Structures are given as C-alpha cells and as structure tokens.
Image (cartoon, rainbow, N blue to C red; front, side):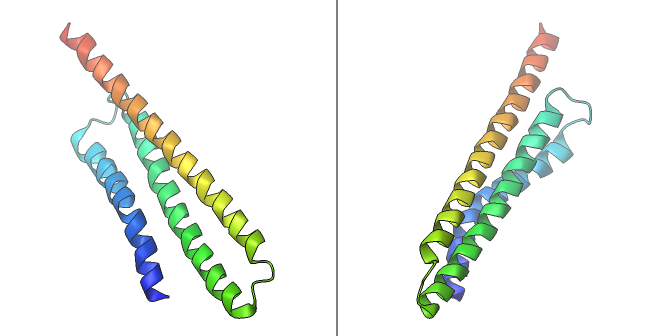
Length: 117
C-alpha cells in the first residue's frame, strides 16, 4: 500500500507544483490591481484545489480497492464507478481553472498592449 500511495502522489505532484509555483509568482511578481491578476489567481487556485481533491479521491479509491479485495468485493464496482466519476469531475474543474488562468493572462497581455500603443 505505501508504494501505491507514493505512485498516486507522483502522478499529481507535477500539477500541484506547477499550480503552487504560478500562485507564488503571481503573488511576488504582479501588482495587486494588475489587469487579469484576479482571474489568474482564481484559475491557479481552482487547478490547485482540483489537483488536491483528485489526489484524495485517488487515495480513497486505492483504499476502497484494497479493502474490497480483502473483503470479497461485493459492492466494489459501485464504489469504483463513483470514484471514477469524482476524478473525472475534478479533472474537468482543473481544465476550467486552466482556462480561467489563461483568460487572466490574456487580459494582462491585452492591457499591456493597450498601454504600449
């Protein structure tokens, strides 16, 4: 089981690190009222939260699988279907967060272009 936990963490680690880095850079490198900053922060937070929830769902799925295999697996299929649906919804939330982050970046680029002209 510890190997499975580390594997599940390894799958989520790149997204967790990337979202955390984006949040840190937005906090350090941008002004509070910068155009698009609020959207970018919101998008990065959604990606980070969705990734954490997906990690928890994966851990729960692994736990249910281990317990189900030990107990005979009567309702294992139902639980696995529920966990799969949850992971899919969290992946969708992460994609929406990435879109919001990109929208914030686009607003910032547009504002910078308008000031330069």
